[in-house]
Length: 370
Image 1 (spheres, rainbow, N blue to C red):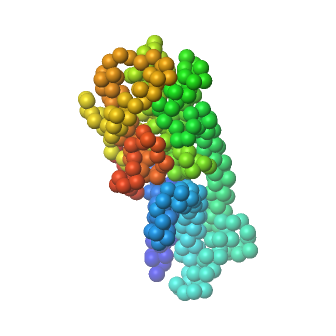
Image 2: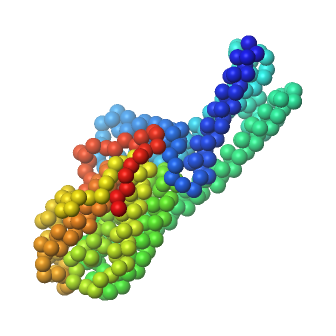
Image 3: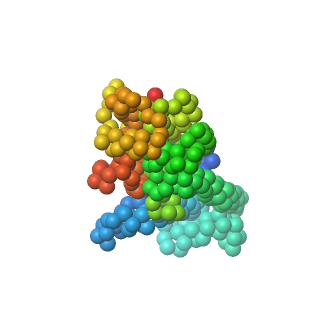
């Protein structure tokens, strides 16, 4: 019996270490390292919300947006609850292994009380014996550490969310909702800011870098929806990348390297998020096809020309170059936009009928585009 208690206690100790490892990978480690336990809790919340939609029988976008707005906050809370609950249970098992009691209701209840009292530093059920007291101190230290990490973690997540949304709101104010690449160029021309588009590309290059880092370090951020139902970080990403690609391939203006750098930063950010979510991707083939119809591209060029924006004469070559540029990010946006259930514009590449990607629980191994 003593050997069984020792083995059970050691297994519980390993369990506490595993949970703390999940906490550290999710909260402390400044790198996008998937933690299986955190993903299970988050995806469970997602599954419950999708079940709610099926039960109610409503699938319109307004309903989906209202329901999925709860996904990220509830998923974040579920992760914290699972971490705390598992650590409490594992410490309860260790206290039971030291008690010498049989497995009955009274022994289990006392072990749960001792673990809870120690973790919350309440002190109403002080254990007896040196080993039990040391275990109580360890439980208190783990409990306080978890509380401190949570206190620092949530404000950090919401600070990154606020930075992301401020830039999106600024884009919508400038372009309108839903934002598109052609609308970005048209509004800039009307406002007399076409020659100052570098101010747009500079800010969004920084934004892409920040999103690529924050949405892999804190993956819950990708599922936080904008305060306005028609705004979304995926939709804003598509609009800015389309605007940069159109300026580079269609407009007859001096080369603007800032737009190219912004485009590169956006593609790199999407690739990093796709890698973390386990979305397979690869560099586009030469002359790769895209989902955007050529007629929509020609319509945008016609609107730009009618407004007085200087365009290149060879429209066929512009389409070929634009298609090559958009092929670098359109497949990523198509999958991520569908996964996030983002609102759509006329230029969006995701649809409500496309298959939805399921993020894996294990660490993905995806390729990155060049």
